[in-house]
Amino acid sequence: MKLKTGEVTKHMEFKTGLPRECPPIHAKSVNIHPVYRFTTTNVPSESDFLNHVEKKNPYPPQKKCEAMALSFFTTREAADELQRSIKRFKKMSISEGRINQSAGVCTINKKQHLNLWLFKDVTAHKMVNIFNGKESGNDAK
Image 1 (cartoon, rainbow, N blue to C red):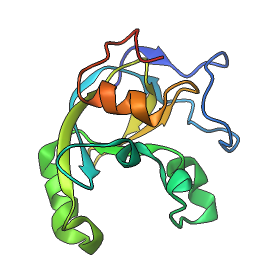
Image 2 (cartoon, helix red, strand yellow; image 1 turned 90 degrees about the horizontal axis):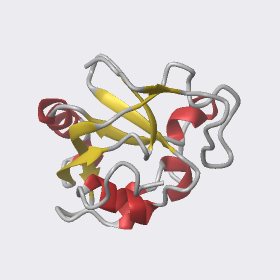
Image 3 (cartoon, one colour; image 1 turned 30 degrees about the vertical axis):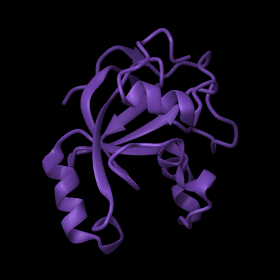
C-alpha cells in the first residue's frame, strides 16, 4: 500500500515526549480502511488505544519512537500471522476499524504493520470513535 496525502511538516503538533526525528519524516497522514488492531475484547475501549509508553510496557530505549506509536495491521492475514506466532497475542481479539488523516501520521512496513503517531489533540477516546467510524476526518482533531 502506497501512502499518499499529507507529509510530516514542522507545523504538525504531536504528543509530548517524542524523541528527535520522531515521527519519521516519511510518515504520512492518510485515510485507511480497513485496519486491524489487537484489543482486549471484541469491542475496543480507550485502554486499547494507549501506546507502549502510556501503558508502561517495556521497550528497548532505541525503540522509543516506535513505542510512542499505536500499532495496526493493514491486512487481516498479517494480524492473524502475528497472533499465531506470538504467545501474548493468542488470547486477544483482532478488531477491524479505520484511521483517518486527522488522527496522525503513519508508516507501513513490508509486513503490513502500521505505526500511527497521534496528533496532540487526539485522545484515546477520540481514537475509539475514529476507529469505529463515528468521527469523520475533520472531527477527530
